[in-house]
Image (tube, rainbow over all chains, first blue to last red; front, side, top):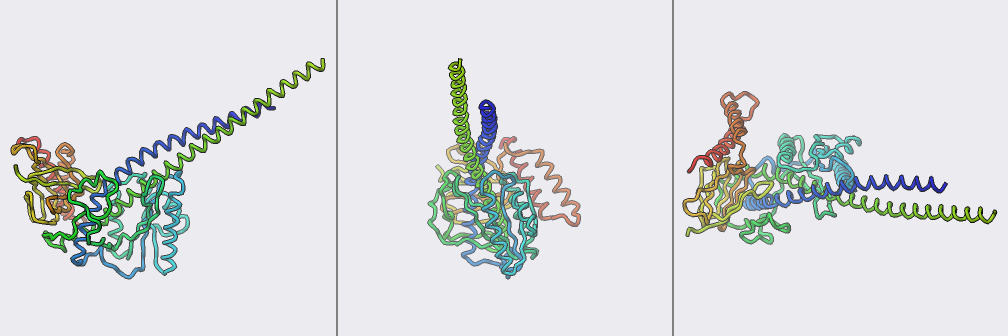
Length: 308
Length: 143
């Protein structure tokens, strides 16, 4: 009887060990992808900062009319929700979806027509199942951001905005704070709200090394220089607007996917630790049971010898 | 020695190129634009074309670095030139066959503009492909 108990425990241990190997492998894959995503995010910041700086500068001199700047009374609002395609990443998707749903429901209570632009299978499945209007969905990004994918999403949004299909477009994604911390964030994408044009903290000239430094904050030191604008502000704005919108989406994708890999790494790491703990506990139980078996056998032999 | 200044070509995905230069030539909307040190602060839109950078410390007769860019912005301030472009490729990163095909396709579209195609887009595509090919060929031919 004791023997069969040990056998069952051995089987459990083997199975837990197999699971542990899988979670460990997933953790390592997530760590590698996190490194890549993080590098991509950092590499993308200098461009984003320069662009924001330029736009702020242009905006400070008064904005001409641009279709993407046009603030209309909001009647139809589109939410671009960025999640992952795969699960096993802790509460990452849930947190984003929760925030998105709160905003969606609030908008609906305010009497707005709403729709979801789902990036990632999780967002698509969740909102489709609950009867939200899905404007568009992508389930093939696989946790990798690149300019083409961002442009695809951004162009679609810009067209819908300019055609008057939607009066506002918002982004919901997870901002990457650190490997262990992701902050679900919602912010407007369209109409474009230009960043403030004044010098904010200001970077020193020669701060092009921004690519190498992870902690550069704020816009570049473009502000307050007396520029020659060529051809002129209005024409520059024409070119800058779509670039800015595309870049906003790109950065959001980068942030969200870096967050995803961070969350997955953390949750797989926890799973691996839990498996190790479980294996320890099971091993202890097996040894105890084995010892009990031996003790029992011994006492049986002794008892038998005494009976003779 | 000629005065020098910083040049960076920044794309959405990374800082593609960064150096100290003596001069740089940029495909501005109003034509190619030569920049030397102490240029007046300027922001200009950029069309697809070739950026030519003469680097410092490479002697007056060293070949300039050529880069195909796909349009965007240039910002010049305090002896820093920042080129914001969607793409930036040096000769060894350019797929000549692909660029040739893209050029043919774009020219074909421009020759027979069917309704429903975006002429402006085709023109830009042609310009991008031409810039790439120029960079690729200029590398091979000695300047």
